[in-house]
Image 1 (cartoon, rainbow, N blue to C red):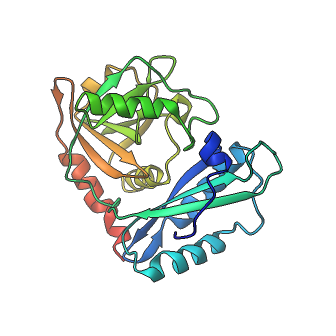
Image 2 (cartoon, one colour):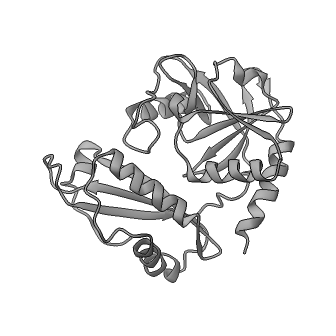
Length: 262
């Protein structure tokens, strides 16, 4: 999006914004409805005044004109809605900013991640923990990961149970059961992950178990996958001294992504 936005806004000055990702595959919006409803839910949770013009059709037309018609065919649209003005006004109008990133989020990425747990900080598991808002814990943890030659880190909640990683949610496969941390544990709500889970359940590929997972669960899994609305789907290769395969998740994602090829 070429239009310049003033930095004198609450998104830049106070982090008063929500972020949602829309997906483009072969020049078409995918999961548009799921991303749109997540945007509306996120704005309501942040008590933003949602404009009446913010319909699904509005965003479909906006992205068609500003993104796909300009030659963007595959990747994510990072969309941020924020309150206008420099001081807090609950009735303030909402503005938005978005930009694109080329990325095939509908395939299992070739890069396998090395993770570790971080215990110096934790993430909350309240109403706002499940949406993408400014989070200093993410910044700290991302710096920690880079300083320790890690790709990502596993964040725990105040009860010392697994919440998520910096960039997304985690799925733990053991035999034919996939355990996923509940959103009440601090996991993100993720349109991408919810679609994967629905596909797995409807096609009887595994048993999905929303769970409360202690940190040691990461060492018991056969395979682990990280699902990020921003970066895509990644196999986890190593956590501390434990290495993981990715054959079953590879098969699942290979089947799942076929629905987005058309």
